Length: 259
Image 1 (tube, helix red, strand yellow):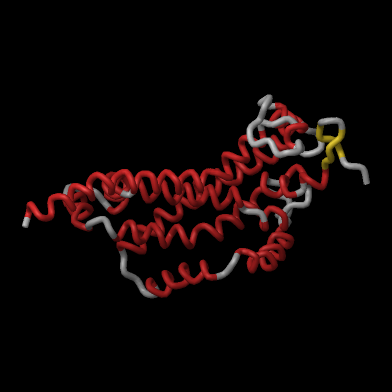
Image 2 (cartoon, helix red, strand yellow; image 1 turned 90 degrees about the horizontal axis):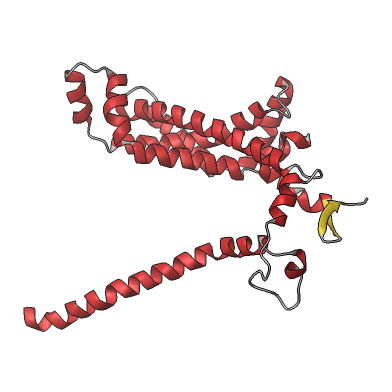
């Protein structure tokens, strides 16, 4: 029996590994293709960018496009970038702290309405963020928070927390209670067990929560457009969306458009 199946097992070992790796490499190249194309395009001169036939690789790589974007007086890319960095960083930290504490409390304690609260958190993911624009805009205008960082941070926070809390509840539930009980027998309270035992074990989940909050806040466009009117308060996504309308090609450089 073993001798009869030996050639088959050998073929699986020889072909299975290379075939899987080649497939993974092709999928990775397919996923990274748009980003690679964007990078190569950013290194082209304007003549190469609009050349016919299309040039796939930059003949004379240059960083002039990055310099123009960063120093342009028409579209303050540096200001947009710093705004996005500040809003996303604060949202990430606040979301992570609240998600860790709320997720631990829901996972470890039993209280009235616990299951209903989890269902509410899950149900919020069924609705797109565009449904929050009208009520949030009315609220921020009444509080005088239009064109402020607080409006963007609170809006992103309200959208990221429900999902991250749900995610952390599942992660904390997978950690055995015996470890915390052993720590509390040695003199720790719940916060001590959380800090010394649970948080180190939950580090991958906390990192995933922080990354999710940062990426969602970084790519958020509707909130940034709706709650900011001044150019100096726009984030990178909102500022870039108006870039094509505020510049034109003139003599090989970006210049203000004439209206």
